[in-house]
Length: 364
Figure 1 (tube, helix red, strand yellow):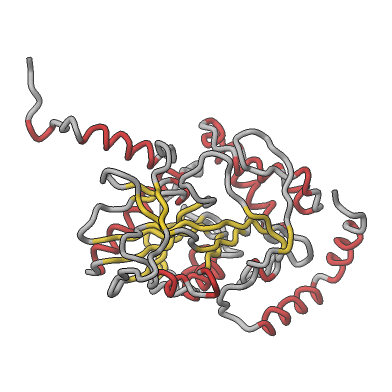
Figure 2: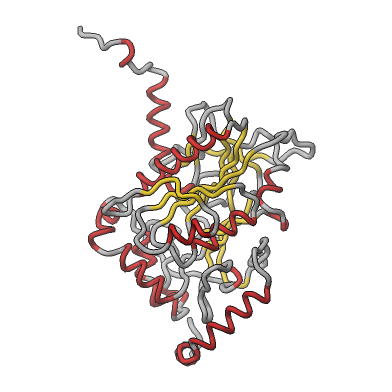
């Protein structure tokens, strides 16, 4: 029998762990890869930690400035951008708001596997270079606006946690446009879209709590690397057993439908046959469902909007005025938002009148 050189052999006990890690990286965790526990009344907190954000983008010039500013308002020290070769002003506006371009990659299709590998690489590289013993990371899509609980910033919240917790989940609210303007660049979407719906998928579920994503993950220089899976829904290490998160967690406001013309143009590009055919072929159809729901969303026919809770074509969302909307820290004054609204309405009076006429009949 020909034996492989020793350095090419994979120890038997390591191979199953590696296979499990690959399954988790692909977004298919075996059961709950995350366990939950209450933060102790007298937690053993970290003496110090760094706090960074990593942001993945593609053609999101309308909202990315606000995404970056919100991250800074929540206490991050730096925002590292991983961009999928956007041809609009996404990178320029992100950098103008204070982000640093860490990676830019070009693909023919939207390839989440490539994006997550590069974002994990940025987290590892920056964490090691920082020299820190501990570094919390906030993982972001450009349409996500997280905030700490109980009016705290995320950084202040992290400082209250017991050191056992290396991941934090988020309650997730999908916001929906109900009036003009649907969005204004530079502002928090929840201030323009106060109607939202709590969202968590029926399946898959990544933890015992009603969390859709786990966007806070901690690097420990002396511990196993926490590697985010696709979509930041969870994470894994090669260590035995689940990762521990605190009960509760943070809140994320998700603004997937923004200015109607911009959103339609972007989703037409994203869901076009050339760019998204590959993703459709492997069952990644959620973006396509959003695209097909555009008419219903902007007409406020909520019963015809894809609910995205399962892979089946479920319809019907129920946005309401949530007490969580607009409670986070802002980087602008209320008067700035009102002035921007007035300026938009002065420039788009005809469009506003038309929209009001179209929506005179109550939506179902």
